Image 1 (tube, rainbow over the protein chains, first blue to last red):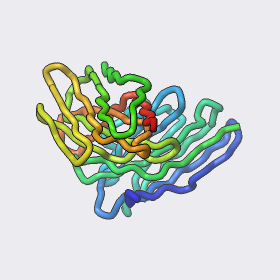
Image 2: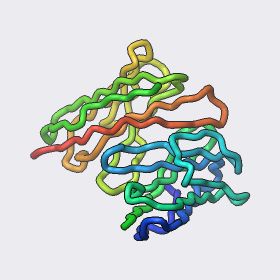
Image 3: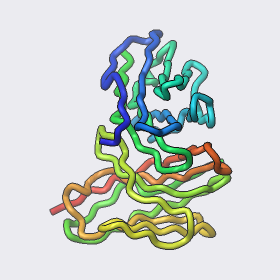
Image 4: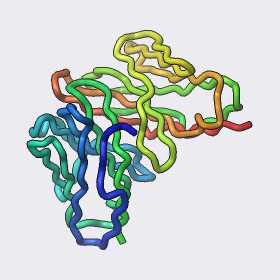
Length: 111
Length: 113
């Protein structure tokens, strides 16, 4: 158990819908990261937040957005969902510039 | 641009040694990580190299050559539970609070009896 929690574990929804994934970092970690893992593309970095501010961005679609709240938990919002958005979404956390520890992931299926 | 290459699949025998290679071309290199991932589960941290040389941690060792853009993960005394995907990841950025990891597609290792 890494200490990072993610909810929900599974999510099934329809195309065009919007969903919110939630992540609680390990105690004391100020940085939160979001990754997408699909079968054909491996683990893709989406975005990093540090103490409430966006710190680094990867190939995150405009339909996706994230934020980190004052209590340091983070949410990833996915809108106008497409079939290709079906994937495992991982959250990770770390202290400043150290090893990232991954949560168990949210498995999203878009039908 | 960024490019990280690893073999797609490898097979090894229980009790043996296996070396998984990773080559990379990235901008702003700031360290290399190896993670293990069992199917459907979260990646778990194995090792970290930022300077050239070998880092040993029990049955696992990792090597880095920054001038060659090359790393390997060495697994000794293989066990069946080592069957998993091994992900090489490069950290980009100048430091500070930015901590962006770029992952390779992973090497799926099958350990056979």
